[in-house]
Image 1: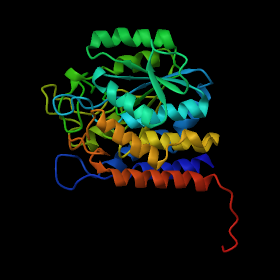
Image 2: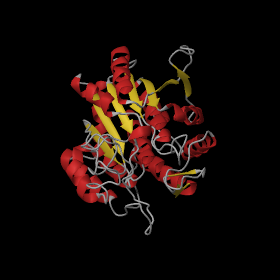
Image 3: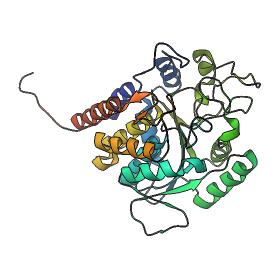
Image 4: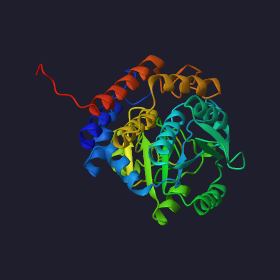
Length: 341
């Protein structure tokens, strides 16, 4: 049953790996998950996939916003968010026949392109070869609020997306300022994603988010809980003083220990729901993607170094996670009568 598989995928995707000493909050993941789960009731991944499946038909457009981190420490973006966005795009392409456009700041274009190719997907800008098969469209998103407002109008009018998705995309707080998880302001270097999601909501477009720190687009569904759970949730390190907790909600939302794990989990749930195995990434796919992403300039967001890892977690752990995720789905989809039990 999808609910049972969804429950197990949710649990796997929320296994927290954070250091005991340092400035990163530890022990928050289950609390954040429980706060969102209390609102939605059902396993988050199966609920999100079911909602999207009801909205997306072959040929429909879906828009994904990602791209976190920025200068000076992460000049070409951090890794987290990019592979997860590609995982979602691949799942929607193979599972539901969607046409997917990914938006990030200019600085992340090279990592996005390299990661897409490593996931065996072609990628192009909207003005490039429209005949390219199995293709994701890439489009840069601006940073200044007025430019984001105009671009959001253009994207929605031009593409008429069935769904708008954010993964590891920072949200403004209640004062309208974007922060990292520790309370630093990143407002000056990030796309104002709320401009896109506000317009999508006004037009009845389904919205979906994935986050891991209480400060990403979608976490507004548990704003008060995120304020209480996260150390900088109510009081940030910038002059706005309003904390890091996201003010922007989405219709569907997933909590993951690493946002990319949520993207991989989404693909696994699509593969289970549709029976299309290619919608789900393999461990080898993820190894190629993480390597390509870092080689193209993105860096581990926790360490701010070009290590082949993600959010401070080494490559071997990501491969183990993918092995468990694939095995979970494969066994759930395989009928078996045990003679020994």
